[in-house]
Amino acid sequence: MAAFVPTSRSGRRISQVRAAELSCPDESVPQEVTFTENVSIRGARVTTVRRWQPGTRVLVTFHRNGVRSEGRVAYCQRNGSSDFAIGVDLSRQVQKRMGT
Image (cartoon, rainbow, N blue to C red; front, side, top):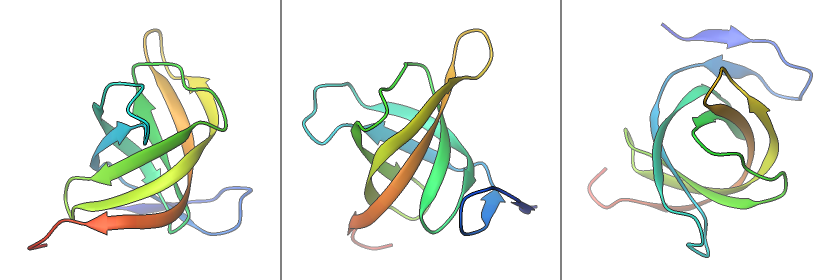
């Protein structure tokens, strides 16, 4: 069950694990299959195995509904000993897979 997560940012985030894929629009970084920790209409917190630089443009594809959104990394924090969590400010939906 999803729960609302209060944040200092505007908008409510929903604590929700969703399968997603991270990639860079210029394809300089290999695609990574990962999961969200929480989502909102404007952003998501995503787990990742690599350190991302704030300001980096990213594409996030949500596997469940096929929505592919473009955004920028807002922050990158160590999330345990070997992985990271990034905040992604989603700016716009790029495409949605056909048939979903």
